Length: 150
Length: 99
Image (cartoon, rainbow over the protein chains, first blue to last red):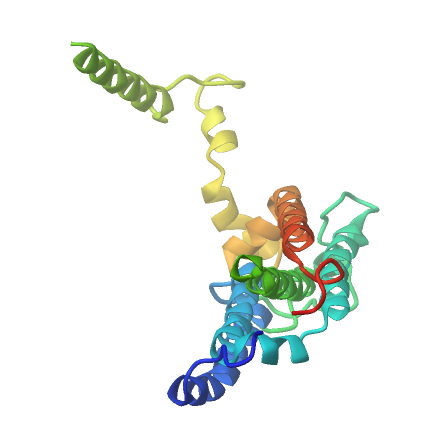
């Protein structure tokens, strides 16, 4: 039933050209979340925008072939667990204590460099993964809900 | 008449809120004197101490992930619950035959 639901050739070619750029920009926003404006939520939403553009341009049938429901559920749970685990790293002092920055072995460079700021990059990556997987899952679920067509 | 009275009451409430919420004339909780401002309006503290206490040069990320970490945790929980609910409500897999 979802055959022939993709858009035209122009839209598909443009999406094929822009989806990698959107993904790269989103990955930049996530990975530099502690240095430049943006962060996990914003970058994750940007990468999810690339996924949603794929869904809209190529149709639900193509998306269902590439999309693994169990993988995305596992990725979202993994993002949340990494977030909680990074928050529990400094549990000796307090929950959400940035112990990697004060006395940690890694991520303790100069402020302004990429490998600095303790658990902030880890949390940004985790939240970006979680938001990306969640938004793509929600969008695929909404797109697959087509029972009014019957 | 009723509408005019309602609009005037709304305007009066807005004025009261503006006076109450103002830092100079508003009501003060907790400490007396001028100390309460340092504890209630903490933005200058974050700008001054955020880089050395948390490490990120993006102060918003410092606040979101360290100073207000519980808020971010709740937000992530809300997002997780909302998406789980949406997927559980809307997914056709396993219920309908695959269309």
